[in-house]
Length: 82
Image (tube, rainbow, N blue to C red):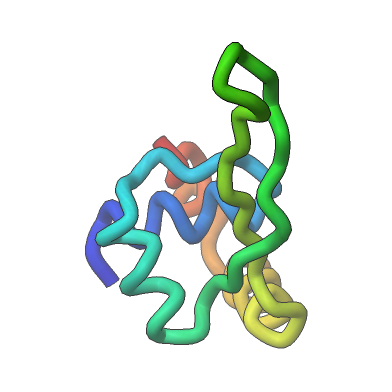
């Protein structure tokens, strides 16, 4: 996993919005590490609703990630999401 993929995976895992582009997100999607959620309406303008994609981590993958995090030394986890 590239640093950008790892960052976005971790952001999605903690329910934050990913910062990467679609190339990064599509790689995670292809690997089955994330799934697309329902688009979220964040506003409206003269052209209609403004929607953004949402992402989530499948429960089994999230469980594995949580287990992996719990096995890491505290220092390794500190500030891993940038």
